[in-house]
Length: 411
Picture 1 (tube, rainbow, N blue to C red):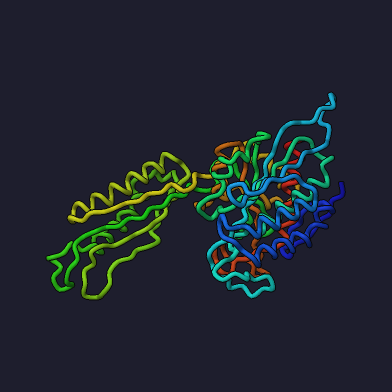
Picture 2: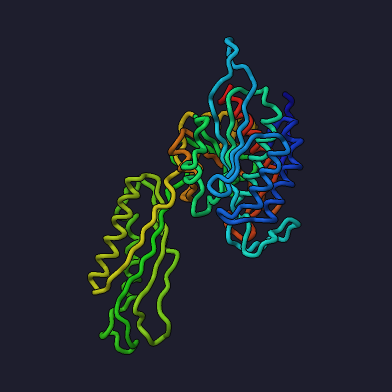
């Protein structure tokens, strides 16, 4: 097996085998094609068709139409793994998400999104290209590993969530998956780094919508009203105190109010006001306390003012919890690919959420961050920004890490 060393503009060295380096132009081409034609969750028909066409052309067995637009490719290794000449029956899954975001792209690039108000602003185009490249490489090198690899192309990570429907459709069965790995291209880390840790990596994601109803009236006669804006303002302030006064300082949690809508004129006290917010945490016991306290605070303040409320609270994704052994597998592989001591970043937790968490609740696994920011090229805008983009050198690096994880886990 031949390896080559590439040097990025930040002078970080990657140990990438020659066959994977040869894939880099195709990885870039695929990624840019997906970027030009982004699709929202459960609408990834063009993306899924392009993936299926490539898998078919390469001769890779696959199933389409899972959870509407999802695809699973199955690659069986051919390496004999023990003296009895038996094939290892372990199964490793690799997961990549395909969907884009409802954002108008502002980048001036040749592969700018051709669809109004849709953009790959989180790197899922790169995830899909990396998974495709991994599938092609593993299929052509089946003799290098035993066991089976399932490559899962998942819809709708950004919402409403495609992981759970895929699991319910049986993607972790027939054959039964023993472990799962996945990556996120990550502009919060520089190119040439990998963020990997065991335990909690990404937060549980929950949200709420609340309507507070008072009694409207003339702005000059507030004593005749129950001012919904006043009540809701006090609620917002109180909600922001929950984490600081009800959660242990040793735990991590966030409550953020993202929307506040009320009123129709300067001299009218509004009948009602609406707020919406998000709740993030790692520990499910903390999450249960937060949900309880949110309603208690809203109910108490409304009661004090004679207002009423309607609260809709939704649990979206659980926390992303990495298995220790699989995280160690990824870390050991990444150390050999990223050839600088500072290249492995264990303190990479984020309060962002990801529905890969449903997979990791079902099987042991590891989700990790692939550093992709390159300020020298102007590629350092944050995720979900209309000018988000990343250094495409990360694509071949992702394939290399996946391929080595397959070989080390299955062999």
